Length: 164
Image 1 (cartoon, rainbow, N blue to C red):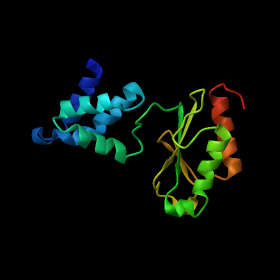
Image 2 (cartoon, rainbow, N blue to C red):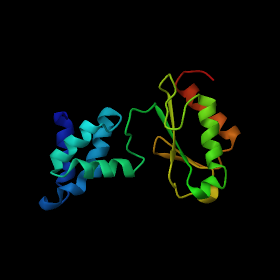
Image 3 (cartoon, helix red, strand yellow):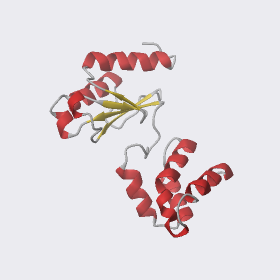
């Protein structure tokens, strides 16, 4: 199911661990599979499980524990909004609700043009800066008022050539 290039990358990751501990490469293999397909499908989880010699449910447990693994196709821009209790107390849920209303999606949904996916996430470790969010699992944004959220959406749309 995986390309030869992907299997070669898996092998490089597995080689970093003792032979009897190749399952330790599960996170790296999931990241590689996601880079190839944009998300981690149940078939990819099974393929990784087979490759690493571990139960598929053990791979699924890793996939579902970390929000960096997409369990469904996502937009060009994935916006994870922290809705953990400290952020809830500082407008985290309101930020998520605002984005969803502005973009016309439910939490976890993607805009019809495939540009933006909005989803809640657990603690991002910046509670004092709430509401906080993570863009494409890479860039942390803090103090995301409704105005700053609107500016972010405009910027992302403009970057993608979608207009405002």
